Length: 543
Image 1 (cartoon, rainbow, N blue to C red):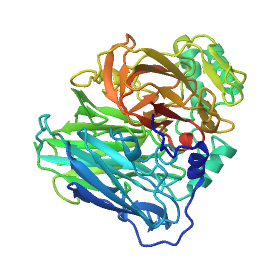
Image 2: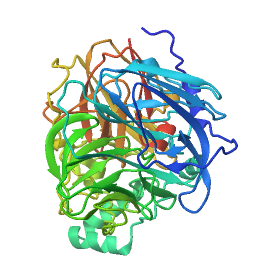
Image 3: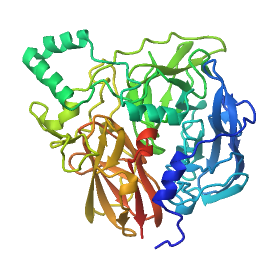
Image 4: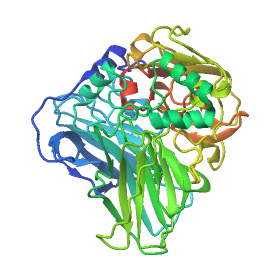
């Protein structure tokens, strides 16, 4: 068992509270394709000025850009990354989705004590996989402030997918507010940024579709739970600006092509708190990779990209110009870019879809027709609003706002990782965790316990474990386990897809298998930034 870990819940919580109060060094710029390649890299983390909206604010950047430079690696190489910290607070870089020694994972306060101000830390590890991944800070509010970038790893033995062009597409969210102010506002009122309130047209629509009695009953139920069925994202375009490769829609990122070329687009959601629904109007996309792993190709019109997830797609454009359109799940804003045959040409940007409120299925799971939710006084205590008694297990659900929209929408049920599971053994035991929260207090947790109240989850080295998530909340949570692959199962317990981040919908139950082949201390957390910061976090120890 490792004995040199710096893990401390107190240290971790302190790291979450850190904010910079330092002089600006220079002006940041949007990364419109800056890349670094090789086996040795020099990255400098600093605070810079940024102006996306007409208001100058403070960003935390790598080498002065947002996003950070894209790193190109070769599977099988040993990479060395020298990270210099010019902040006046501790920083870190987590290599999201990479399989590596726990001391190189960069999870501040869990397996890593951080990079102190005015020092350089050198990460060094063998690249054990290929595909599209990303990196970001795991300290304080730095990820929300701009510290994130892409990683592209060329395969060693797998066939290379030949394309004419290859573009990385990093989606993210930016706020001019201090992130701690955002968190304070959510603590004061969980719906502070939610302006998609239920209105008379919503009510009339429900009455016409479901009848008066059922509509009144459902509205009373939401009221009893002190929940709003339109609160899908916590944070809206009221404060967020949505970026594509560091660019706003007013001055969009542009990728060039020639008609008939085969193009690979590597979509990464680096948003702190935003789910993006991605499509290219009038152009089909063939999904070939999920979270860096090759999947059976599947043609779709649209896909939902949860925070920290990534999908690679192939397209063959035949017209002069297309819009890359990524609308937020709450339909308050969007990021976009242009694919064109020459600079200056722009395609039409579609209107935002209408926001859809959560349904009874989203609240009650498989017993949507009857009261199946215990709330306020559930077995998990005051930190929990509600508990779903009969969660649904359907991986073929497109999710709120995407159901029956007339487009072919990707679901987890469509994804099959090539080559199957990494480990053919059945699970030796099961661990069930409930995703829990209290919206009035804006606190989030596993099994009603926030990080500081919890104890680590212990796994035995090399054991095969089934982990079950039951979402007892009204929000979709992208859950990320560091250091090990999560092999998602279907409802029959059969292997489906290998991922590093699994988005669990409201009132849903999902299960996945993990082979605990990575000794050390690892983080397990919701990748919604403000959910992680308020307690939906556990430490996993493999020994």
